Length: 128
Image 1 (tube, helix red, strand yellow):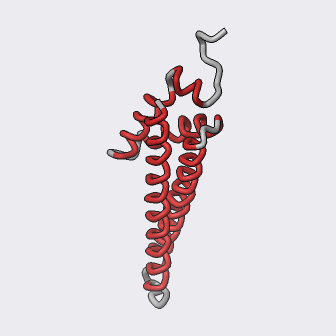
Image 2 (tube, rainbow, N blue to C red):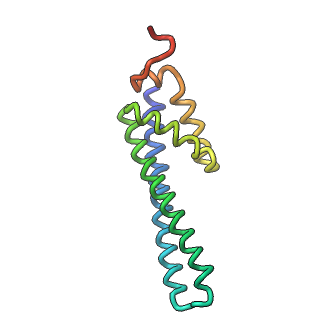
Image 3 (cartoon, rainbow, N blue to C red):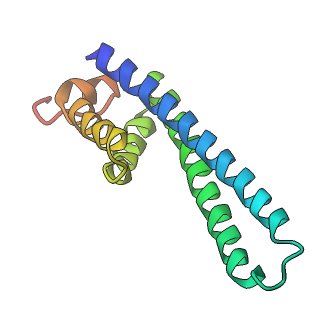
């Protein structure tokens, strides 16, 4: 089980860095779009909405990626909060086909069993 938990931690770290890179790319795209429309007042209204959409998407992906990196570190260090946070992050990850879906399913498989509960110091149902 330790192999699966370490692998899961690394997968969250890698997945998180991809999210941070996507967020940075969208932020650069937002800046470029804003600079491109600066001298065109006719398209400014529509393009401004596009810029804000890029900014919002960049923030979501960047912060979500950073959170995934932190959770991956917590999983590797067997923090109880890391287990709970990974289970919470697995739910929105299921919507990000295909890798997020696989990561979410693997998270549930790896963390919702008695061996994983013992690794993270949680009480197991059969323990007295």
